[in-house]
Length: 416
Image (cartoon, rainbow, N blue to C red; front, side):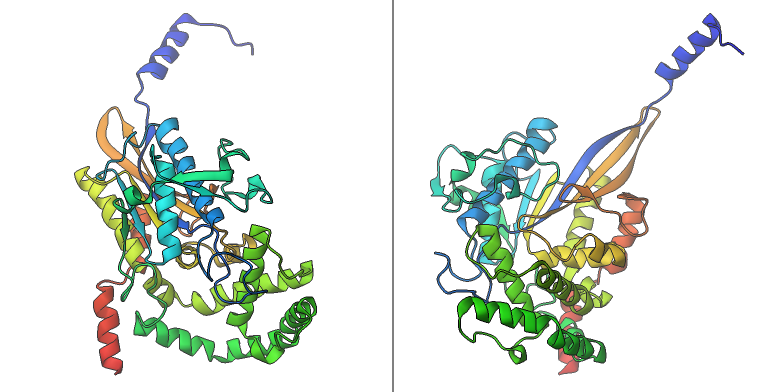
């Protein structure tokens, strides 16, 4: 059968196409949780005094990373889409930071990239000559607006940025450090029990026979002294050796020359520490993530119910904050397959809130999209990396512990 043009049919198709209400998607809100920029090793040093900064401190390269991360978000949400206001508006843009110095400094640099200032202090990047530009940010869709000259120096107005960044108190911090230190007795108790369990004891025994001898041999041979021994290592201290390797190799500073096999073993060890000890227990993950999830939930509802919520909320955070969220939201197989236990410096988890508006109906249908360094996050209980708002809120509520302060305090007093 040969199709023939028919004016009546064509007219109907024209009317149906142009007069049928079309649903379209708009961006309503963006949440981003980012790890701080590059830092020095936190504890183990391959050699002393390899950095001008102290242990665990943000380097100038870390500042450069965060500055251009902010600039990238400016390109996306302001210049590209005009989603954000051209000038900083506290009702539209909120920046929150952990109290750790390296995170605060990262947040200050990020804000300067998001809203560049006309004056400030120039910082010279001493790592620029050796650094590979394509490694600056781990984002998959990074705008190619940065060149080698750009990273030689940046100008930061930190005094101005300090007025914008909300630093959450360090004492009894249940927002960024709920599962660390003595902030919550429940988390401490659960983690202590896990570390002493037969499963972890057997894992340590296996590591002492396989991974630890490789680490000891490489380090001691490179230094020419007996720096380490198998008996001094456990999962946590061996993880610090990998941390030193990652910091030094990123900054192009002298580091242990582990072969590929040893590196894979070290990465596996880090996976074990993150997802077999820290966040295998859902309660520990929930304690760690509750305050962040509560915050996100509150802002979304303010926008949905009152139309008054801020458009952009940025959390300057740590790798463990994202890892806790990964453990709750993602399928267990993906944690290892996608290497969600190796969070790079300046990595970012994004939660975008969109809505569809039908011309026939004033009601908005909200949905969520999640990304990690621009790659879609395929979330449990959702269809791919999209969730209806109802499903996302139900998922969040499953992991939020109401009145976390009272929960931790009451448990501490009860246990005492």
